Amino acid sequence: MKRMRFVALVLLSPSLAWGNGLQDAVGQALAHAPALQAAAAARDAAAEDRVLGRAWLLPYVVAQVAVTRKQERYRYDRPISLLATRVRNNEQAYSVMAYQPLFDLEKWATYRQGAIAAASGELKLALARQQTVLSAAGAWLEVWRAQAALAAAQASERALARLAARAQAAFDAGTAAVNEALDADSRRDLARAQRIRAEQMLATAHARLQSLLGAPANVPARIPEMIAPISVHPDKVSAWEARAARDALSVRLRGKAVELADAGHLRAVGGALPKVQLVAGLSRDVSSDGTFGGVRVNAASVGIEVSMPLYAGGGTWAQQRKSRKEQLRAEFELTDAQRAARLLARQSFLELRTTAAEVRALRKALHSAATARRAAHAGFAVGLRAITEVLDAEERLALSRQRYADAVARHAMAYLRLMASVNALDDAALARVDALLEASAD
Image (cartoon, rainbow, N blue to C red; front, side):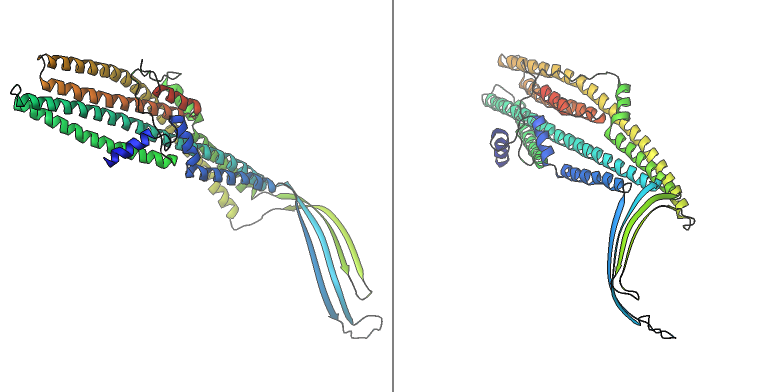
């Protein structure tokens, strides 16, 4: 009973629950997800790699100041009165030096790596967002499905309890056999156990959804009986496979990894090439006292420096071989990601098409089960049907309701996975699922 009160409180109290649609729930999950916030912080950190890489290509200016107090004593083999033998002075040196790379392939590759890392950060954030959307949608649909299962179990329990009471009354009056009363009792008890199990499944589903949203969610409990399955265009699995191999976030992220490996190889090659930079400087040296009194020296310089490593213990060549292996690894990982994206798109497309046919079939089965139930009750009322037939009809109707809701939920999830496989999981896709689940029952 306590569990039932909790479930009813969550379902029926708008003041405690947040939102009532899939799109609302996903929006709340995106605002609440710590993993997504961490990915956003990582994206912001990766964006600084572009600035750091660019800094290596811009002028580097450094200023230096040195102040020294010196005391010197001189002793000459032949004393000369003109020359001082003891000097005390203060020396001050000021300088400003500027360095501008003219040719440095290693620094250029570092800049390219920074730009690629920033773009990869954006893709990682988009991938984390997509995973959050799928997790929230899956949890929301699980609650929707669990509510349908609980409603079907409760209806079945009520109907079987009434039939069990009628069978017991008929047995007491001597108009029914004992096996009919016992059969009705056993079916009622089984329905009660199924209802308890459905309550537990609903409570578990609500707990998972609440952990993702940070607040209880008010999921609609009504299940439309005239749902029109979702259709997608183009209706060819090969087109979706090709699109996934090109647009999937995992594939694009691996593509950036290939670019990063190429830039790493370029950086390794640059480590063995000459480096040319422009150097310019201004300096001023001031000495307060000397042999001939105070001295002031002003200097300006400009020139070009060229440096080239001649021997580094084999490290430069080893770095190039290593970077080439990293390129191969990144290319193979890209191929593997494309293959996985094609497979996911194919599976999602086939699941969408299969569940669409299943929804249509179960919709007819649900209508047939409801008609058979009414016929069984009418026949039993006039003595043309046995109570076991009525019990069977009630159980078939409850099972049809559960399977229909399960098929609709799997159909919606297959559509969302298909959209995610081609990087098209946006608000329009979520709105389409909301429209599917809110279809009129007329």
